[in-house]
Amino acid sequence: DSGVTQTPKHLITATGQRVTLRCSPRSGDLSVYWYQQSLDQGLQFLIQYYNGEERAKGNILERFSAQQFPDLHSELNLSSLELGDSALYFCASSPRPLAGLYNEQFFGPGTRLTVL
Amino acid sequence: AQKVTQAQTEISVVEKEDVTLDCVYETRDTTYYLFWYKQPPSGELVFLIRRNSFDEQNEISGRYSWNFQKSTSSFNFTITASQVVDSAVYFCALLDSNYQLIWGAGTKLIIKP
Image (cartoon, rainbow over all chains, first blue to last red; front, side):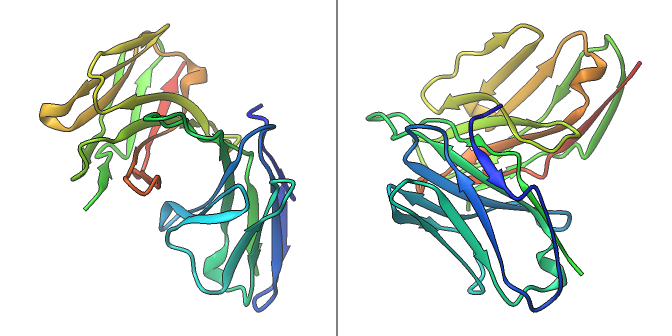
């Protein structure tokens, strides 16, 4: 158990709908990352938040948005869903990096999204 | 461009055999980090190792060992005396200068009893 929690575990919805995925980082971790894992694209970095602020953006679609709240939990919002958005969505967290070092990311169990 | 290549899509060996998973990376950064993660059938991603670009020492952890060679831009992973529980997809990843993880496509490892 990595200490990162994600809800829900599974989500089935229809095209055109909007869903929200939730992530709670490990206690004390300030950074939250979102990744998408699909069969055709593999693992892709979507977005990173650090202590409530957006830090880095990857291959995140405009239909997707995220935020990190004052209690450090994060939500990933996916709207106007398409069949191709079906994937496993991971959240990861890491502590504040030490000077000159980088801490590994610890991953949650993922949310499997199925768009029908 | 930053890139991670895991050329082996799938490897199948019999239990107790040694197996090496290859990882080749490309980066323009002089400081970078490399990682290996394991994804068992249950789906979670499990951190195995982190290596920074200034530390070329090989590492051994039980049956697992890693060989980092900057000269060939490779960070290979060897499992000695493989076990059925090692069956999983293994990912190599590179942390770029924007602190984004660039992932390889993964190698599916099948250990047959």
